[in-house]
Length: 286
Image 1 (cartoon, rainbow, N blue to C red):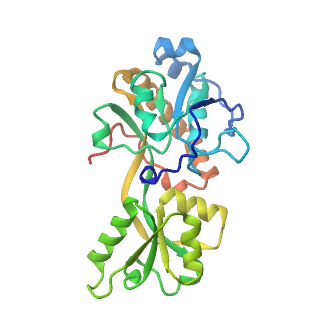
Image 2: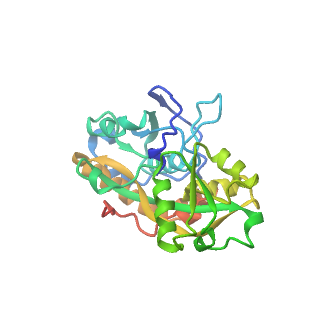
Image 3: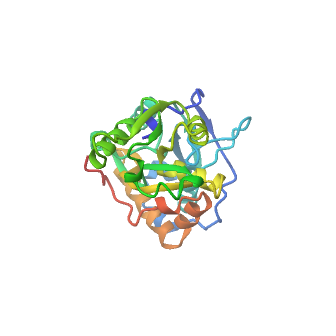
């Protein structure tokens, strides 16, 4: 959902090389490396395209070019296992697909949703579960336990996003006609939280990873209401012609999961709930 609400910081396209992986070092796997296309193996690097900034997935601190986040750590672990160096190129979101299909980048790893309409140009390896969630401050826990408890209440939602329609439609499906969820559109998460604390709203909507990050950054202050809605997956995306590299990365992800590295990276960023059981190729059906 995050790409319907542009969060790019207006950075020009630039390549960043971050040397500190933050991931426990593992020796390169020669068998996995042997499955790489010869051109990639000879280059000695993997070129990942990202679109900043979306914590906790990919971001950099103010005044720094050091890249951080779950996607960054996972990309470095993939490259390391293949005996390669990870390089990152930041582009604005509309340039992600052209960057890969024209061969200027090896793959996209940037909270990029696997969608059927994108599968015409790209192959995806689904590696991260996301979706929409309601949340609020802990002082509402006694009165708001489920989505149905939001009937007749006000929910602050990011302006112009798919979350607006989702919250409104869910309200229509579970609430009496005279007690619907009132959705107010406000630009930023900080403003949503302020509305809740000032009593003008009782809850808000965010992506699963956004809530997990918020709970990690401010423990004991927020909680999730109900289940994750509209579950979908972020995928590492490759040009259709790059199936050999896709398969090598897919096997590498399986290896990272088998030895616990994938779980370790999820845990480091407070994202355990977003892990997948299986790295599916082109798993989206809508």
